Image (tube, rainbow, N blue to C red; front, side, top):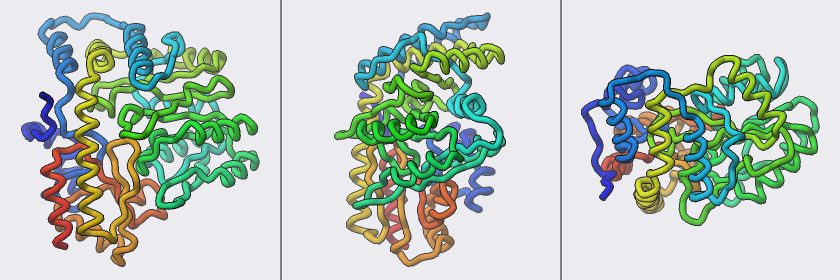
Length: 385
């Protein structure tokens, strides 16, 4: 039986999310539950632990590269979990998803070009664009009937302007929790192809999908210079510090270009710990993930019910994927600073919304991959404020 209610406290201060110096610098306090970084408080799946133990006990760490077995495990996983057929020959391994995005920005665009992001969105995208000497182009998501949607009219205008050469798609979307449907992606790809815009799709949360929703990958589209960051076990299995990223594209010319750059910089080797932990995760992690999704679904239901009954002026947007929730405190009548003070009094450390977009000061993102009892305690404290 997998128990997600237990949280190992022994090494928490070594984790970035729990590190007292980090908490002090961001929140001005250390005595709080840190729900701000998108990682888990849960112990990883037993097959991953067993592989890491096997390698450590073996005590030998000579050259050992086996990316093909990793690609086979990912291909089988995506066929099994998402009914998506991939070809292992079309993967390129990189040290991480952000490394892959940074590389692709440089490969698909030139200095001074525009790279579009759909805000509010993961704040590191902006940094990757600006540090590559490219221009950030915003296309804000719009809210219709309480749900975030792509603004296709704005996208069409931005693409037609000639200022955009590429875009970063976040699917599932961090922080708003959307899992883009096939029809939504069809429309986006059609627009991108019409204006020769390449799509870089960050799909790191692709396995955290809730009941009633289906993950669809840019990897399924054969036309255009589109590429997926697919197959990283980081978010799915809590392997952020021991995971690689995997670039995938069905555009053979683009694939060869990217592979040549990766090979020229010797970025694609990986290491034995990462390799065999990843194979174990994607080969033997189904039961653990199914249990995790069930647990997270229970947590989401409890939070939604609590908010509706006890703090109804706080809006929680529907969560289709990821283990993040996106909360809007605008209707409470409090300023962003007053909201922060109330959260800190309740010992809750949430990611400020202006990290994802400057216009979202009264929004906050919460990572819910923590024991439910902790989350319940914190929300009940918030109610009292």
